[in-house]
Each structure stands twice: as structure tokens, then as C-alpha cells.
Image 1 (cartoon, rainbow, N blue to C red):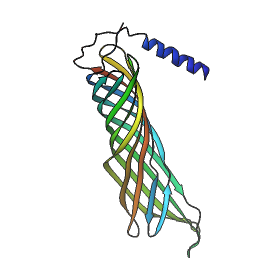
Image 2 (cartoon, one colour):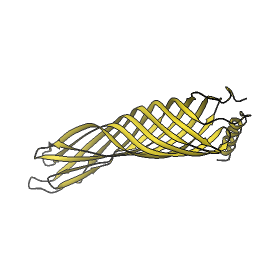
Image 3 (cartoon, helix red, strand yellow):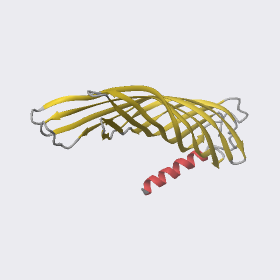
Length: 246
């Protein structure tokens, strides 16, 4: 831990020492980002008065583009930013119930659930404070959205046979919207470029759909929550700041 603290302090001092003049945070910028996400997509299935919970989680990578606008007032910086990412974050989980008695002997329920976020984007407000002329720490929050896929199935196994009978199966693909909140730190590398590290928590609400079943239909509800950590490189337009910070 002590080595990590010393290394972090050394890294920060190296970044801060690159600037001899204050970086101008005002204006329009755009850039690219890449990172890692991990998600929770716990699924509930209800059919014929019975229900089961299928816990599932997973992870993956994402990368994309962003654009925003900053306004600086003294040591305070605020603005708005939009981004979109191509994502490979996927989840999976399985459920195996305890054997239950029936007129045909012991029966056991089982199920599986899979999910994937193909696209992930946000529209957020940002607000922060300068801890050095070329270093900003900030909080952020706003709208989150994504194209989400889910698939689930369930079965019953009569253990006396044993005989397995499909119970339900279904899938859904749709755009979901919710909210996100997080924060990060951003450092000016030159008069027109910055490097950022950021964390976001997101909640896209629940995906609900009907899955055809042996009797009627099963009602499926899957959560869409997770976390993202990513790095971003931004390029500022129409800058009045020096072209380099030496």
C-alpha cells in the first residue's frame, strides 16, 4: 500500500509539473475512450403462480467516442457530455431448485438466463474543481441508455424417470434507458489534449418480456445494472490556450 501511495504521488507530481501556465478548460472537445465493465442482470421468472430467481453476472470491454462542452469559472469547471460505446459486456447465470414432491414423484426445476449490452451511452452533466492548473477532479451524472439482449429458459425434471420437460423459453432485444452517476480525474497533457480516468455506475431499469411456456406464458424480468471504468483522450477545439504546456 505504501508503495502504491508513493507511486501515485510521483505520477501526480510529474503531471502537475508539466504546466507552467494555466490550462484553459473552456470550450468544445471530443475524443475517444476504452474501458472495462461488469454487470448484474439477476432474472426473475413467474409462471402459473410459481416464481424463481436466477442470479447472473458478467463482464466485458467497451470502447467508443465522446463530445462535450466545458465552462470554467476560477477553479470550478462544469459542463455537459455525451458518449456512446460499442460493448461486449455479457452476463449469464443458472438456477437449480431443490426437489419437490408431486403426484408423479420428486420433481426439480432448473433455469438459465443470459444477457448482453451491445451498445451503451450516456448524456451527463459534469462539475468539478481544479486541484492544479492542469488537473481536474469531478462528479458526473445523468441519462444512461443501451441496447440490451436477454434470453431465458426453464425446465422441470421428473427424477423418477428421469424425464426433463421444457417449461418456458424466450428472449428480448430492446433499447433501455435509465440513469448513471460517477466521477473521475482529468489531466491536461498539452494546450489542446487531456487524459481522463472515470468510473460510472449505471441502472437501465428492468427488461420485462413474456416467454412462451407449456401452459400459458412465463413473465420474465431481468435487471440491467453495472459498473464501468474507462480512460479517455480528449481534443479541444478553438483553444486560446498555448499549444503546449512546457
